[in-house]
Image (cartoon, rainbow, N blue to C red; front, side, top):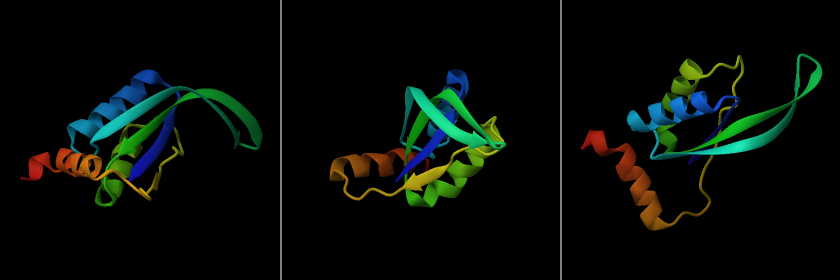
Length: 105
């Protein structure tokens, strides 16, 4: 599963990513810079440059990931949603599972 989250500050993006990996909630977090976001907020069309977090994990960790993001994220309503893998390389899937289960062995 990949969880998506967007944030407007690089330091916060790195802080959230590091926290998720350190707590073994995610195997990897990619931070994509210069995402142009156009959205409706308080009845106004807004534009901003943001950082997209792509969080690689498993379905069972979604709630814990969501809670961690909500604890650390500055937005009132942060983007938090997941997509399950339609297809995934077996070795990569095993690496994700091993990475998030390392403390549970």
